[in-house]
Image 1 (cartoon, rainbow, N blue to C red):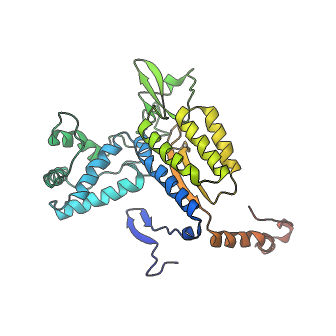
Image 2: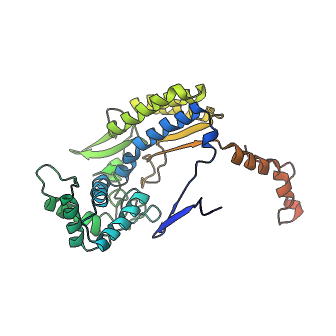
Image 3: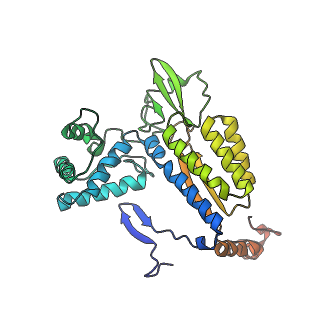
Length: 336
């Protein structure tokens, strides 16, 4: 329940709600569990930019421009800055310039020249921008302009039904396949279908493996460091799972992923746990490549007991279901 000192809805940004989550029960965890959660959260943050890049290759460059203007906006026209703030919030919420629900691109709703002036004003205030070697600020702005303002450039992040005669990979703006069409994949067997980017280079298909020393090697090495720091604070089953995850990140091999998955499922009594890795395949139009994700969670004893109480009374609810008693089941038990 929302109260004056405990709000949930912080703001709305177009069709998105920004909601406050509270760490109820975290203080009740043991010191070791709290430290474990800290290191796992650092591992999650270390991999955040992987997903940005997977969704859309220019996203990190675009984000760097936006955040530099937001941080050094003192000399920027107020209306322009408000529009940049609005777009930046949407960019953060969607991990890039494509809507998470519709998959369609959204654009910056301000005059492009006003945006250029905002960037120059921020630069004059000390902001640094991701210009390429030998590239002037104006050249950078010209190069990035269609990324921010052209709705027809890379309009859909994942296009599973692009239209007659169009290729689902070519029509998708994500960064999971580069220069690859479905026709290219005929007869090709991927060794790393879940954890690689597939690139066509000099007429050959190459799997760029997501692992230490491979694609996203820097980010994954940082994840591994934080996971290693978590090990001394983890109970044995959790430690086994995290160690297996580290091994998988180092090799990228399917067999090591299976060892991790089995260890993670076996760890049923952990009070602190995490999801960390290349998991869901919805970003890929052909449903093969895993998008990186992470979350850290823990047991809240009070809320857990409330759910268990409902489960214990499952038969009571079944007996009062609003349909013919002939269809009510005896011996109903709640989920565990």
